[in-house]
Length: 76
Image (cartoon, rainbow, N blue to C red; front, side):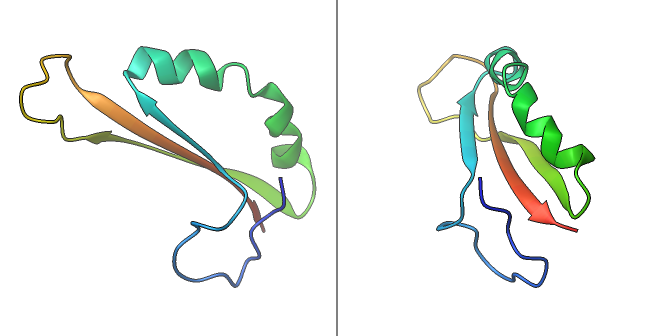
């Protein structure tokens, strides 16, 4: 993954990143497999940015709460 430059403003749509959606348990299980990304956290000059939030369910779907998770590498 190419890090996002520290002066970046606005959307990250065209940046290297990972987007996960689904149940909290599903996202947790997938995140546990991204251990290689933790090397960016311990490298000087980069950090891992993880955002997890609950999203609104679609009408008529009785599956419980859904979540979205975004993962990016940023320059410090």
